[in-house]
Image 1 (cartoon, rainbow, N blue to C red):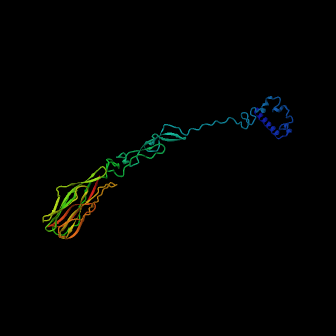
Image 2: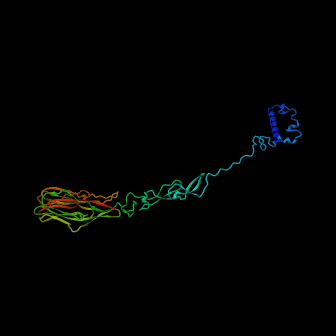
Length: 379
């Protein structure tokens, strides 16, 4: 009951103050019920009567809940003690728990780490070996790993050595990383199949008979023989040599090894030769008999053989081809009187003479050069 009384008294006091604020001094006496005894000089000024002196402080100094902010629950703000906020549970807790980063290799293993309140799987390694070539070539020949970073996004692979498109034929390394050193590089020479040219001369005589170099060899010298008495060509002797491809420190070359016997073979008519014309290419570099010229009618009236030379050059794609350049010679020997018509029997640019087929009776009636293509064999 005491608390209820104090609230009523405080209400009455508030009404009195409101009246004074309106500026009407006559209304300062009395209370809200019109009691004339409640004057300014009345002992009730303290909010109680003389018999209750303890009531005065209840509205004179804020007391036990009087004012708008006083006390412990009486005023408009006096609603009780304020609530204490409770901390939220942490959103990320660092642990030593293992995790997978999603990256391949050593970069894939990690531990959980808090970054800005979020759990992030941090890799244990800062870098790892990598290889961006075909898996089958990794650690083969010159091919080797590079490195890539694991921190943040997986880094690009740098420093790895990848297979070369072609072997370097002048080093001892497996450049294309296929397990074989110098594969695709030239290692030797070979002659293709025989390609006989059209015969020149007449249809008579005996035979035919053929003189031919041994397998893998070509003609480097021709001795043309003549019957001086009758002014006809009588036959030919051939000298042969076998080519060998030689690999140097930075280039290739060809050496020629003469074949024995020398001459290697001879074909003549029954009329014994009286004189000889020699066409010799030598055995230095890649050179060979490549074309034959002379004069023809029913017999071979004049005869000469000429040489072609070829470079030995390795191309950028590791291939090698030959192009025998003739010496632009058209000379031949004959014995007067000059008769017949001129002929020229030439092998193709990559071909050499490997032999002759001839028809002979008393003299040489018909002659047919035999050509073969010179090719390269590769490892």
